[in-house]
Image (cartoon, rainbow, N blue to C red; front, side):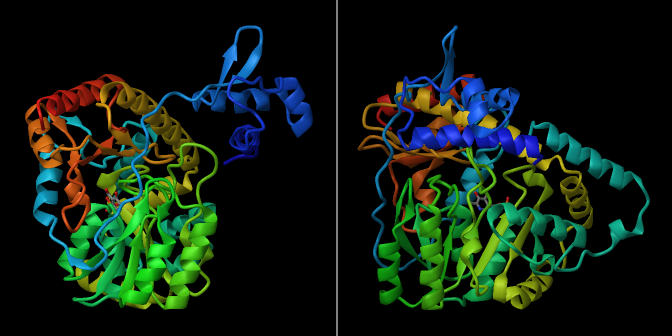
Length: 473
Ligand SMILES: Cc1ncc(COP(=O)(O)O)c(C=O)c1O
């Protein structure tokens, strides 16, 4: 990010902070661009750009001949409350349903709200594909060689360079390239657990994590989780006293499906708690770069001083899931992870790693992220407006501050699995709640992707859901 870009971001953050702290209230007038420029020591055009950003975020609005004002917040559905899962470890059985949903959700002509696929119509994806084509055209024997673990050196250097934004100082030698974040999560779990062990998870949790736990013969202990603040550290503390936990696996920044982001202080507390208990943290940071406003949240790994956090991520949500470029920073488990990567898939495909390294080196990724963040924020706001109007009384919806996924609690009596099947028949894919729990909970919840569909399709999708609920789903 260039210096000018940072300045107008700083102007925007200054105003956001004043709104957050109540210094500026809804309906109040902002300082004039000239006045604020003088106060912050920046040019008028920098303030204009900063105000433009806040307008895009729908935090402020211009009024003819009067300047800029703080917008009144739109009416939104309430958020679901803290989850209350089983208080003991359970075996996981979600794989069959997960496979069904993943396959069915991709049928052509379906309104895609059921998968966690990102938008791939951003210019950066075209740029990446051009790099791939250029590399593929040129005869280069390196492209046909195995890319042995830890993987492509330039890509690992770029990943380490970008980790600084998440507060993580990592040597490129520690980074191991994987086939997406899913492989990183599996390698991490294999490095720190054995069959029969118990792993603590957030609740609800990403079904890919649940499937990994199931396939490794592990048990899951669900920790009560708040849709805005993340897992209850008190509950986790109690679980650590009560059960022999082999690991904790979490998505502390913009989790799937809840969308919460843990505050910095809580991330620090989590890392310290697990360090003193001698339990490794597998951190899934796949959505961390997709904050809708402000600065990117720090990864929990930023507080790790002993190598107890295995940080997993990929380019799947920020750029292109088809590329299958992921990575793990395994901390003190590096040797085990490199060995496991070698025996499980030998190497990752060579060409995509080269292309991803070149793409990240080319410097356009920050601009792309700014565009993607803005796009997802706009779609979230539209989605919440539509949800407020179209979902029945008694529905509750999360309002994530990053990513493109919402968790929706539907009125009592809803059967999310029946709703899923009936919605598919009407051309709308949704993800039913029980997919996100090892014990089949969340029968009246659904996860919806608001990032992939435009306003019109989103409205049609929600209308189908409303009609089916009226019919008694
Ligand atoms: C939280 C989370 N982790 C991991 C993954 C898997 O990512 P990848 O496609 O990079 O393997 C997903 C994909 O949906 C996800 O939502």
